Amino acid sequence: MKTFGKILLVGLLMVFVVACAQTPAPAAPTTAPKAPAVDSALDAWLKAAELDKYAPAKQDWAAIEAAAKKEGKVLVYANSSRIADVKKLFEAKYPGIILEGFDLGGEDAVLKVREEQKAGAFTGDVLFTSSAAGDILMDMLPKQQLWRFVPDAIANSLPDAASKPLLVSRYGIRTLGYNGELSKSCPVGNWWELTEAAWKSKVFIEDPLNDASTMAIYTTIVSHAKDLAAAYKDKYGKDPTLDADTPDAGWLWLKMFAKNKPVPQPGGDEVTAAFASKGMKDNLVGFTSYSKYRNTVAGKVVFEPCKTLKPVMGVQTATYLSIINRAPHPNAAKLFINFVSSKEGFEPWNVIGDYTPITTFDSPKGAIPYAELSKIVWTIDETAVFKTISKVRDFYAINVLAK
Image (cartoon, rainbow, N blue to C red):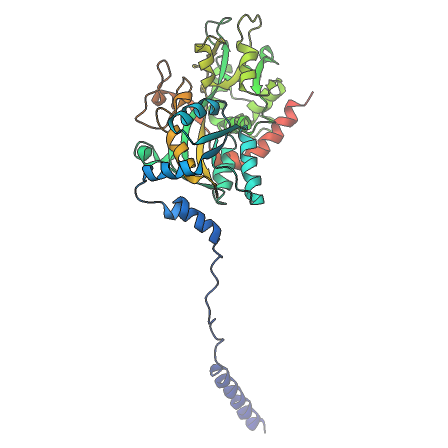
């Protein structure tokens, strides 16, 4: 019986194995996964506007101008008061097309675009701003709230960094400035001096807690810890002593600078007036745009930039031009972008302190050549700013408000 039982068990196992082998595999899906739904309205707009995949190999500017005149106007959200100057130039060149230019400030311009896109209220045509550039490049562009457009007249005169992923209209420099009536040269030679008691409450800045572009400047400064550590050693002859909450010299500089109580102002003009007005008695300094030097040339102020400041003169920013998603006047938007990218249209910004990325344009007389300038400034890393600006803002706020 035992032998019979073993034979029976082996037989049953063989039947089970054969049955399993003959069991058909699960049937493959008869339909492929569904592709993402296509926004037909967006696709139709892109096709009509000849943008993205519908962009022609060669731009027909006669047709673009004719279509722009039918559209009748272009709405530009900017963060430059000089949009009022370009309005006069643009409307003189293209009579019948109204330029509605709004100097909203960078954060408000970005917020307006975002809110309009969210509500489906497609009103604006062009975003023209340097503020919140990290949000523009890392968030709004991937979400297709903005579209790239580069006029073919300048396409071959731009480095890739100035045309991709969006068109750069100009570069600016945020630098430390001093009063030229009170000092023959900059009274500050090293950034670490701004953390010393002698300069407590004597440094004027745009309020970084209310201005994203200024906070981006400080975020960039923090990221250059090695250069700041070297500048500290050059100044004091030793390495900086770090605190528990300052992992490197970048965070240490920001902490000490904040605790030295820089004086916040609502904007760049107010900063310049605070330290560089004529007839002042107190020797003060301020972080402001190098382009404010145009007011010195005009005889309005006595602002002079600290060109020899160590470790660098300042921080370079970029101003971007893009067409807003579903813009109601896309051809007029193209015409505007082409105009401000020309020598005629760039004229309001063709001043000492502003730099066009177009290699065929010359810098204004008296300006530091861009090839030289690029060696003595830090460039904002928009990706790093986008990732860390909130952390830097919180850290700065804690220390600037501390007693």
